[in-house]
Image 1: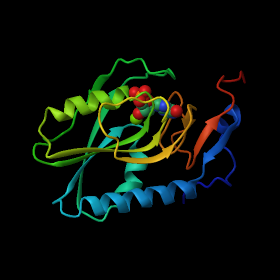
Image 2 (image 1 turned 120 degrees about the vertical axis):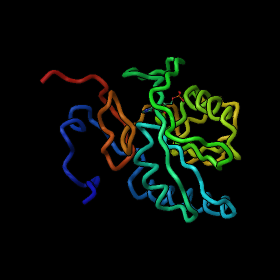
Image 3 (image 1 turned 180 degrees about the vertical axis):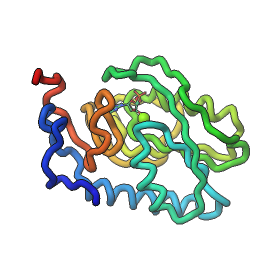
Length: 193
Ligand code: IMP
Ligand code: MG
């Protein structure tokens, strides 16, 4: 059973004093809306090649896929630009490449959050060289005031302020991915036990 916001807080949530920023129900509604929009736009496509950007997007992608009514195929890619820091280094390293070609396919990149846009810009550059038939991006969250991306970000979920968020796949130093909501950490220091 899915852990709800009413469940007792995990020790991590207690230690860092987290609070709900976007509730589980709100996320589910937004994911459905995005799924409908994508299904309509791709109704004439044989299938959508979904590229899930690991790790942060895995929960969003899993939910989104199940709201898409046209055939999809899935592949995974992982880049790192943050390490355990909370500011973008501008250094993007390819940790895991796709397992198959995307030549002639309708490709949709699934991203959790666009902050500066550095990560996504690099990925778009890499994928454009591989001759997809089309290339679009869906991001659940966008830090609107900050990002610059030389490419259209066609499908956007929530536009948020420049706030560090966690949960629903998003981490803070690898923790908190399992939270069913998107939250904020009020205490970023880990207190001594
Ligand atoms: P960008 O390259 O600055 O756009 O950063 C994008 C990546 O950094 C995202 O795909 C996330 O993995 C991570 N990131 C950016 N902002 C946050 C945040 O608020 N919480 C958790 N991860 C974040
Ligand atoms: Mg990401």
